[in-house]
Amino acid sequence: MDRVGTYRQMVRIREFEERVKRSFAEHPGVIRGHTHLADGAEASIVGSIAALRPGDQVMATYRCHGYPIALGSDPGALMAEIYGRTTGICGGYGGSMHLADPAHGFLGTSGIVGQSIPQATGAAYAAQVRSAGSAARTGDVVLCFFGDGASKQGAFHESLNIASLWKLPIVYVMENNSYSVSVRVEQEDANAAAGEPLATKAKAYSMPGVTIDGGDADVVHATLAEAVARARAGEGPTLVESLVYRLSAHGNSIAPPGVPLHYPEHEAVTVFGDVAEYEAAKRGDPVPRYRGALVTGGVLDAAAADAIVAGAVAEMQGAVDFALASPDPDPAAALRFVHA
Image 1: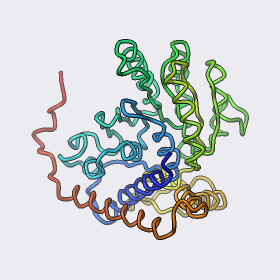
Image 2: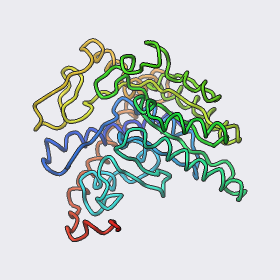
Image 3: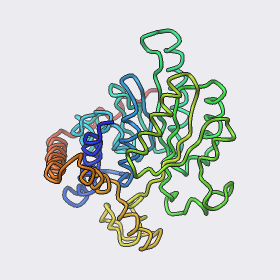
Image 4: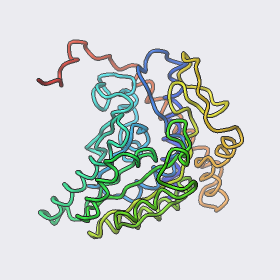
């Protein structure tokens, strides 16, 4: 894995989401509806996707900005989509929670909890069929990202069962950020003892399951590289529980203690967690943590790391400028993709 490139991608994702967050205050009204940020999960996203090759595909949750960036999507088109502009990656029809870029292997997302799991399983079946019929496509793999809360959906169990039975080329990456909205995962999961890794659910479906530190990009990549190689070789799926921590508000009125909302017009706040927990999570922020590891290890010097940050800041300012300059959709086109 290119560790400097990994750091660059993590910084780019963080800066993109910082610009999304700031847009609510700096450009009121340009973002309509919700955005769900994934700051704290950058190492999990980038380390996982670095294990893929061209032809592989990804499906994710509605907390979805980082995945297409890591896959190579244009940040300007992504920002324009979040702003609802015609130059958006989906023409302004999707918005923040419904990004899709099949040309870069990003199949799309939805606001439905657990949606990615059965759909990615279907994509893996399609990849298996393609591989059987074309030597050039042998070994395509699907990565499926979802949150800990989605593992309570029936589709999770059905999908893992059939993926194991048919040895589908898929890796399930459960990004466990400890909270389903504002409820601790240990409190919500009635089927597991407090502290039991959710990856143990893999045992029920005769597949490998492993719990890892999702804040360490090197650990994530090593784990996913092994799981992807297994899937590519026709040995079936793996369940990876990637432990991360959501550093921003969940949405418009739910935040860790002391964290400002990125929807300033909302005053009612549901606070989850506690100050000590959140401060500990901030100290483990994967972006500065990875920078520190690279600088300490002599892989990158401080000046080069600063240049990467400056480059990301300039790039994402350009994405904002592009989105702001892009036209709003014509209201007459609202029903263009609606069929009866």
